[in-house]
Image (cartoon, rainbow, N blue to C red; front, side):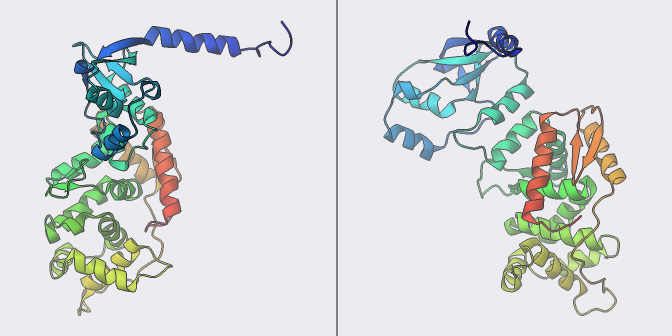
Length: 340
């Protein structure tokens, strides 16, 4: 064998291990379309995307190989390829050649769905479904907080759901920065002041209330705050914030300042300190305690909690650690309203 064709040491072993893993855990099978189903973590079919695929014409060579997970009852969860399944079904075809995983847990399916979902990047709400289904601790904690107020994350995007909220990034941010207790308090204040007003549960309003609460939680009178908020509407607050917003401040920061002005009103009795551009986030000890409490509440056992920058990272959760780091970095870039 020439030097050009020789394999580097270790490569052959890794290749054989990779192929052995495929042989052991997957198979290539012609799967009946009638036995395929979408698990709760999956994205519903988008009519517009399916329409574009139909307009482009049916080409079996372009289908690739959908990924399925075999279930004990003989059905198959669609991990990747739901739109292709509907496209093939529209042509009267009854089976598809698929890569089938044999022994995935439900949580592993949900995580694999996230990793394979590359044709159309998964949205925040798509990832939320998957996070809940694979029992990510922070998602379960946020969901429990919302349930306590009769709310839930609406993953359908339907505006007519009176109890649905979709501002996952804002909920995640506040949960990471300030912890479960303060997130619960912020949601409670918004609900008590404005009920199910849809504008009240937008990302900017939640972040704005969170920014105010992070600064003045220990000095404000909660009853006074709710009473003052009831005198106006979330729409009016956002409108006023839009008129005075400038390039040096984010929308949530301006909303937080507006809430401070509303709280003080014409009274000198309820004056509070000036707005601080930066507020101290939870200490490492406090945040670590919240993380451990969160994991216990979710029924998860962590090998340890590591506080990194602004995020809680569970070293036992693997991909969740990467997601937490990514989220924290994204929030730093967005200059959202808390500071370090």
